[in-house]
Amino acid sequence: MLQSDQRSRFFGRKEEIVQLTRSADYALRAVIDIAIHQDRGYVPTHEVARRQGIPPALLAKLIPALVRAGLLISQRGARGGLKLARPAAGISMREIVEAIEGPIALNRCTVTPTQCDLTDRCALHSVWEKAQTYLVHLLETTSLAELARQQEALNQE
Image (tube, rainbow, N blue to C red; front, top):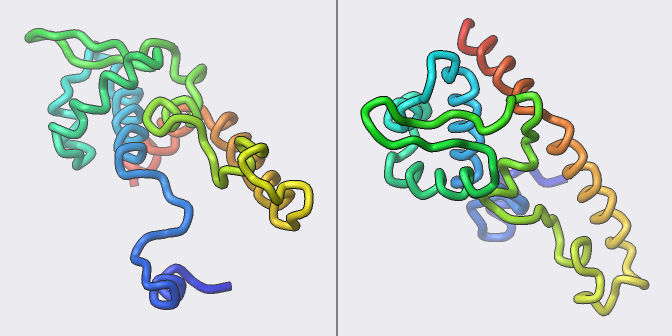
């Protein structure tokens, strides 16, 4: 199997084949940060941006989607900031990703088989379907509480 840098040279690409956007990565990091720091109340947005190395303007664009998805509560003002809308144990990694990206899809035929004329006679279909199922299951069963605990442990090292 080609390694990432080999694939890039071979196909003339610089990015991975299947990759979350930077926005989804930033959203995950921001929500983990909020879960860790919200014990003292609302977490100021600028602190999240600074700690996570997220451009403040981009974080400001992500927050409304996370609020609409019922993941965060946003409060303006001197004592404002962000906090989780629900307990971290009840928020999955999938919810955070889908709030930013929309439904997770490795391949169009796994989400909408009718869009592919080859679904019934394509050896790849079952592989994509299994990979899709596994990825969605992994993200669904990984809680924000688990990610926050892991991040806190890494921060202690």
